Image (tube, helix red, strand yellow):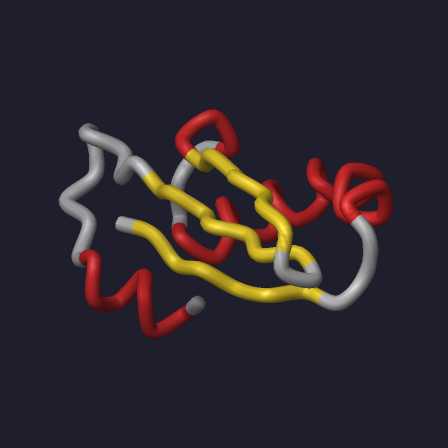
Length: 68
């Protein structure tokens, strides 16, 4: 599953906060940080976050998306 958000700022600012963003999104999605991939691209800062649900959990994707 993935979400795409657009942030104001520079890619340098995003890179400085990337770990915090990844940790926050992982916590909201209920997955380990290692299961979150952030892909930044130009357009202010367009960020796509891809989540891999933990296989050990019976994860309801719709409940995760509501939190995000």
